[in-house]
Length: 116
Image 1 (tube, one colour):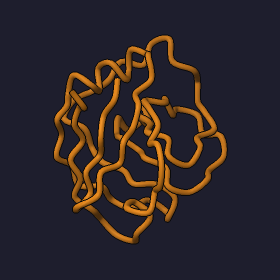
Image 2 (cartoon, rainbow, N blue to C red):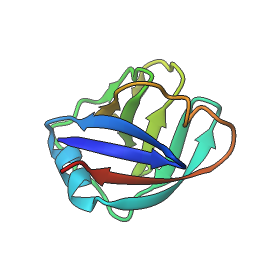
Image 3 (cartoon, rainbow, N blue to C red):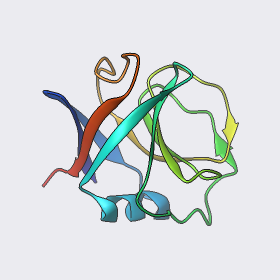
Image 4 (cartoon, one colour):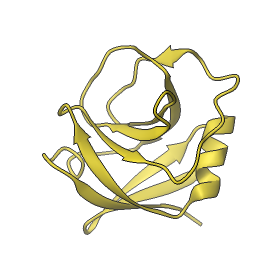
């Protein structure tokens, strides 16, 4: 499923994975979120509900552009810098293209919606 993340006047196209967590995330869309900076590596935000994680791997080594769920906290995490393996991460999807809109310091307002 194709989605887009809108930050200011920039649209970041993305594709969701074919797994139960990503499908449940898609059902939440559209979402207006405040993305907070976390350690200069990722943008994080609370979600309005929980996502299923059964059958998900124990963790992943996220790439720049990965949209993930951090299962222990139940929050969304979008990586704009490289990071090593972390247990509890579930890949939801991937941003296609530049991460410049998310690579700024501080919090951002974003809208995540399906592309019809």
